[in-house]
Length: 284
Image (cartoon, rainbow, N blue to C red; front, side, top):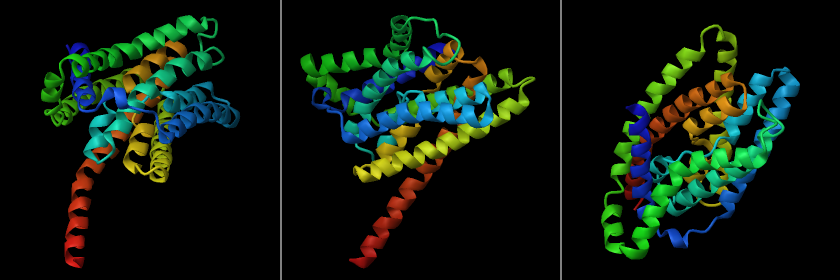
């Protein structure tokens, strides 16, 4: 049941998001280019450095997948709720996932347990997994904007509902995450602990670097969310297929850290906004 409900919720979330922007006018930005470059370069560099320092392939592969994992399909919900530019978020949701579909097969051809798998086979497997999440709502929204603009505008009016759908999907995902950690933790407690620590460090680094890049290009929130919010479901699938299955625990813990931080941001943002507004009123 959960396996069906969560993809359906993500589809509706994306449809609401895509309908709320003019898809034909989306253009990649320098912020997106920098985030994509960081994701590719530092996932490989992090893998190499961790392998050299620890001599542990599982930990090194955990770092690799923790950075290379594509941006979450539902990233727009939190990012836009916090004030990010919707166009930037939607654009990189598509571009970032396609980037991983192209780069990941090349990386997995030299790292992991599927090094003999042909590039095009690997590329198709990853692209198909990503496309099932992104392509259908994107195509539906594009067709609506071309042929039924009034219907598109009607759907866009309810874009605020995406937040509540995201909260429902989050509850289901966290339940599956806790079950996954409990299932794979037996007999691997020490490795699990190290992977949990790595996931926390990666979460902090990616939020920090993303926000710094976002600040430089005028959208701090978009930078942080696009860099750090990951599609854990696809990341876990890639880890189980291409790497040591235990490395997938990094994404399970990563999902917890990310959503804890996002929950705090969503709690703190309106209070900060209200405080700034009151301070501005007093000054005037």
